[in-house]
Amino acid sequence: MTCLPGATQKKLGLAIDLDTCVGCHACVTACKGWNDQGYGAPLSDQDAYGAEPSGTFLNRVHSYQVQPDQGAAQVINFPRSCLHCEDAPCVTVCPTGASYKRVEDGIVLVNEDACIGCGLCAWACPYGAREMDQDAGVMKKCTLCVDRIYNENLPEEDREPACVRTCPTGARHFGDFNDPDSKVSQLAAARGGFDLMPDMGTRPTNKYLPPRPKDKRAEASLLAPLLDIQATGFAGWLDRVLGRI
Amino acid sequence: MHPAPSVIIFSVLSGLGFGFMAYLALGFLSLTGLWAFGGWAIGYGLAVVGLLAATAHLGNPQRALLAFSQWRSSWLSREGWVAVLALLALAPIALGDWLGFGVPYVWRGLAAALALITVFCTAMIYCQIKAVPRWHHWLTPVVFMGFALAGGALLAMQATLAFVLLLGLAVVMLALFHLGDRQFARAGASMESATGLGGIGKVSVFEQPHTGGNYLLREMIFVVGRKHAMKLRLIAVLFAAVLPALMAAVGGVALMLAAVLVHLVGAFAARWLFFAEAEHVVGLYYGKR
Image 1 (cartoon, chains in turn orange, brown):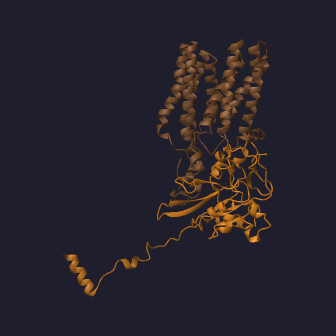
Image 2 (cartoon, rainbow over the protein chains, first blue to last red):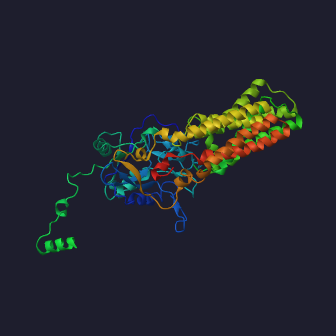
């Protein structure tokens, strides 16, 4: 049923650290690699080696330039994937019941056997988290690697989403936001984790950790004392002569 | 939003068909015998061709029957139900008009109501979507209903009623163009709120996440054709409402039928614009609208 559960037992999700993300796209590749096999229709590519390659991805990394009122601009890398919202608009619009939010852990999933590929859920999502697979004609979205996190055939350290497991800078954290003692809850509380587009009323589970403020030094440059060099001796004489010509 | 031909054909034709059949059900056009058969065939034809066109939009149309299951939450599912119920409820009236037996007025009223509720449900599929601020306005269902009622009145040869309704349609179309232009700003979504980085400063795209196209860019970030939006708005209002209203004012069966065709040209232009002009908030992540 595509009505949303009132509350979920767990609220599994990601805390994404915009301070440490270096924009390497390893999470994009790891996600694509894992979701090419196993759960559901594989993420397909069209014209992969041709002139206009295009494909289905569940995770994309944007790069933004942010210009403060004063000082230099900052580049901030920004991974974007499903936020597993509590008020997920993608779920309620689904006419077939293919889209659903799990009561036990809050993961938003698509039952591909029931998906007619109408695309309405992708329209309803403000975050662009859903992409229609052009080969299978069904909607694909982040599963929070539901086939890894509970998979007892995997070593315990691998039982987290592929994007989290692969991130070389530790910018992605996975856990239960319903548990105030979990790593993700602690991180979100300590670092001021925020929601994307709160005006859309979706109540996302995933939290983004803001970039830490940059250090500000009193002097504009460490080299400043060295910039006003008074030449002496032969160089000073040359400087004066050349200045007069 | 990508203006998919299947969805445009569906909403224009089925809207006109259901609007027309509402008038037929209420006995505005008292047809009998083969004329009744012809009239109802046009109504059913428009509605059914439209609904079939909509299935061309699906990635897996063979499972379309599942779309009847989620009427509790989904406007698309509700639309499916009401469309089928309307087509079933209208059938005895159509047969009665053709074969000459009476159908109680209560039943006729109910069937006409179901036909119009179908159009309302179609409009609500778009109106409910917060992520497309231009659509998320109460005037969206008003405009859809306006098209069904005004177009239906034209087809039902109700010259005076059509004249009034078409002028009303022109007003609501202009109102939605005017208010729609302000909806995106009103929704409060910006690159700063989308990324949550507004506290640091002004956000702009440094590098896109991918150099090729993708589903989001094709489906939700459709920017082609907005260049001529103003001209198309003029064409839409003139052809869908103003010209047919003038033709209805003159009257006569031939002119009324011609007015229906003029109205359809305008309706297609208006519906194309309805999609092409609609901006999805996901475009903010790409620095596009």
